[in-house]
Structure formats: structure tokens, C-alpha cells
Amino acid sequence: MHADQESIRKSIRSYMIVGALLLMFTGITVAANQFHLAVPAAITLALLIATIKGSMVASVFMHLSHEKKWIYGALLLTAVFFVVLLFLPLLTTEGGIGTPTAQPARPEAHEPH
Amino acid sequence: MEIPYTVEPRPDSGLANGKLGIWLFLASEVMLFGALFSTYILLRVGAPEWPHGELSVKLGAINTVILICSSVTMVMSWASLKLNDFSKGRMYLLITIVLAAVFLVNKYFEYADHFARGEGPWHSTFLAIYFTLTGLHGLHIIGGIVVMLYLLGPGAGLWKRHPEQYANRIEYTGLYWHFVDLVWIFLFPVLYLL
Image (cartoon, rainbow over all chains, first blue to last red; front, side, top):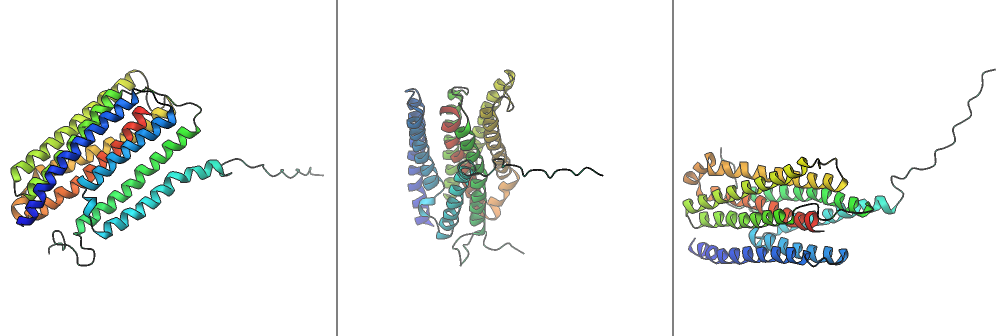
């Protein structure tokens, strides 16, 4: 228990450091927005910073840096499906899904004699 | 009859049941928000033009700072309980609830400003996806507050009977809370800045 408490005390320091870094990265994100970069560059930079921040939250606050393999397995599966989900709509725009096709000609109505 | 593996890890997974359960729940949450992020991308790529500067970056940034601080206080609540300091654990939990409430108050002012100008979800595609994403996120904040209030109030009695189990519940709530923070970390640049 004492060894456990010692590791928790060490972790508290890393929580504070990560908290400060997250605030700093938020400041950088807002500051970068003031430069009015071109849209592709702005998207890349903002999402890069958001990914770094998200990784810090997941690895330190959510303790993913030292978790059991079952959780890594579940998250790996989630990540695969998440990527599929993100790119699934592209199939609807790239392919012909959802576009109206030519209607078959309606058969001529026969006049009753 | 007691529920097994609430504190001690299962021999097969090496995890307490609650921990595996909350991670599977979070996996389903990833898919829920993933579907909406995917919708956002589809709408944005297909739109001839996309509005910029419709939202208050200042309010969005303040809310980001609030949620980051609440994540720190949440993990500090768990760490305090692991150090057998119940009063500090409760204090940090209370601060987390207050920060979450402040986040919602800020969001209320943002929403009220939009509606006062007649800019509801029906106004544009951008506002439709904005209200959907932030509304769903706001519901998650409310859900988190309800659980934390329970753990602060009636659920706190568990600390006297099973302190380890109570600390575990705080940890699982924290995992959920950090996920809510993580979603906002992506929502802020996507909706407010880009």
C-alpha cells in the first residue's frame, strides 16, 4: 500500500504538469487562429494540437500509458471502426450510392377495345 | 450476495468488472460522437461555402480552460482518495461539479445569444451541426454532474464500508469525465476556429 501511495504522489506531479501543458496548448491554438492561416494549414495545425492534447488526456489522466491489454484491445477495435465510420460517407460521394438512376420506361397502357 | 470483482481484478482480464465496463461504454461513445464528426466532415466537404467567425472564440476558449481544469480536479479527487484523504477527495469532486456547472452556464449564454438573433439549428447547416454536437456534449456534461452529485451525496456512504470500491467508482466517473473533456478538445477547434 505504501509503494502504491508513493506512486500516486509521483503521479500528482504529472497531473499538474499535463494540466498546465493543456492550458498552454489551448493558448497556442487560439493564438495561431489570429494569424489567419490558409484553411488547409489552419485545419492541419488545429487538429495536430488537438491530437496532442487528446493524447495527453488519454495517456495521463485516463492512465492509458499503463493499462491492461484487454483495454488496449477494445480501444484498437474501436479505433478501426472509428476510422471506417469517418470515411464511410466518402463512399456515398465517390460512388453512385444515393444518386437517382434512370427510371425504366413505363409500359404503354393498353386502351380497352 | 455480493457482486464479484468490484475491487479485486478478475483472473482472466486482470481488471475489475467496472473498469472494463466503463471502457466498453466509452468505446460506444467514441462511435456515437464519431458518427457526428463524420456527418460534420460530409456536410463541410459538400458545402459550397462554410461560415467563419459565427461563434465567440473567447467563450469557447474559456469553456476549454474550464473543462481542462475540471479534468485536473477530477483526477486529483481520485488521487486524494487513494491517499486516504476523503475530505480532500470530496473537495476536488465538488470543485469539478462547480466547474461543470460554470461550463453549462457559459453554454446557456452562447445558446441564448444565438436564439435572440433568431439563429436556431434551422438557420443554417453549420448551426444545425453546431447545436447537435454541442447539445449532445452538453447532455453528457449534465449526466456527469448527476453521477458526481450522487457520489458526493448519497453515494459517499460507501467510503466508510468499502473505501477501495468508492475510489474505484470515482476513477470510473473520472474516465467518463476525461472523455467528455477529450471530445470538447476536438469540438473547440472544429466548430469555433476552423
